[in-house]
Structure formats: C-alpha cells, structure tokens
Amino acid sequence: MKIGIITAMSSEQKQLANQLTEIKESSKGPFNYIEGKINSNEIVLMQCGIGKVNAAAGTVEMINNFQPDCIISTGVAGGIDTCLKVMDVVVSRNIVYHDVWCGEGNAYGQIQGLPTFFEGNETLYNTAMSLDTETAIHGGLICTGDKFITDRKELDEIKSNFHEGLAVDMESASIAQICYLYKVPFISFRIISDTPGAENHFDQYLNFWGEMANRSFKVTETFLKALPNRIG
Image (cartoon, rainbow, N blue to C red; front, side, top):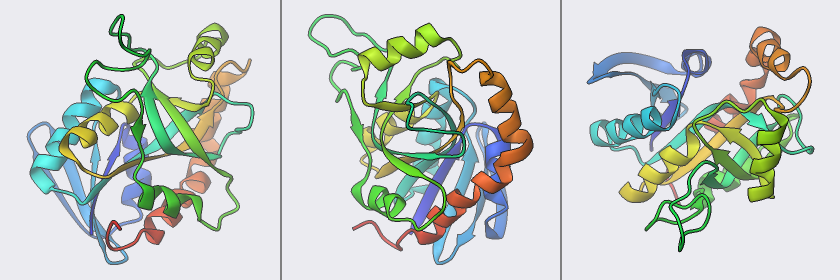
C-alpha cells in the first residue's frame, strides 16, 4: 500500500523521516518529498507548511503526483479537554473546522455543500486505537482553524461550539476536506504538545520539542508499522 503522510513543520517531518528505509528525495512544484518504506508499505512524506491553505495545496499535490491509497496527517496538536495530557495521542474519529461560518442554513463549522464533520477512515482508525503502547490514545473530534490557540476564552468558545472536541490544530480539516473530495481514505494522528489555557502553555510547547519529541514520536512509528498492506 502507498501511504501519503503530511506534516506541517520540518521538525515533525524530521521525526518521521528517521523511520524510513530505502529513502529517495524529490521535488515537484513548491513541495519536497521523501519516499521510503516502513515494512511492506511505500511511504511518501511531505511537509506542507502551517495552516489550512498550505495543507489543502499540499494534499492536492500529494494526490495528483503520487496517487496514495490513503493519507495520514500527523504531527502535534493542542489538547483542549481535561482528559488529555502532554504526549497523549488523539486519533480523528471525525474532524471539523472551528472557525467556519457560512450563514443561515449551515451548521457552525460547515462549509456549505460539504459535511460538517469529516469522518476518519475506519481501518486506519481501528489500527490506531488497537495499538499496544504505554502512550494513552484517545479517539474523537479534532477541531481545525487558522489560529494557534493560547487564550482561555478562545479555548472555551471552541469547547462550547464543539463539546466533544479533544484537540485543535491548523491542518487536519483541510486535508480531510480534500481527501473527501478526491475519495482518498484519511486519518489524523496527532501527539499532544501542549494544553491551551494553562498558565505555562507556551512553556509546555517549548518543553515538548526540547525534551519529549523523540520519545513521543515513537508511538507514531508504532502506528505506521502496524498499518495493514491494504485498506479494507
């Protein structure tokens, strides 16, 4: 199976590139790609850049250039639920925009004509949730918007609109939307790097990359190695 993996930041891409064998690098258009293998699966890894537009553009390019059997968005996200702590993982049962409003007749978070919630692929979701790992893995709702959330008031507003929300990021819903349009199976697999609203929020984020990233990305490696060789 050919798996497209999209990260937002170079630090995330570096963590994943270290897990590949038979590495080959290439450039197509504005994006760079790292191809390799994990077990019997072919991997195409790209860094799209931060935010919804970069994520959407990167996903279209990934699909057009490599025709992956599925796409995984991975990297870090902010936790927005009290059940989460730094280094936990959230897997997208579904994904929504937390900063979209298209007016009357549409649900908050819904782009008119599209589903409000984009569903994660069942095979990928079940694989992630069945991992035997010391890291806590939570399945649920990821909320996406073009903002790095640090303010408690903003956090509370997102939670009031989406009570089931577990994590926030800046890419997953855009990637999910493109995969929905192109009918490509998709999942978001996100490590919690910080808990927005906490007094030491930004310190948490910096400490994650300084002290915890190498350990926490091991669960991503476990997930990728556990993936089947086809989507059921």
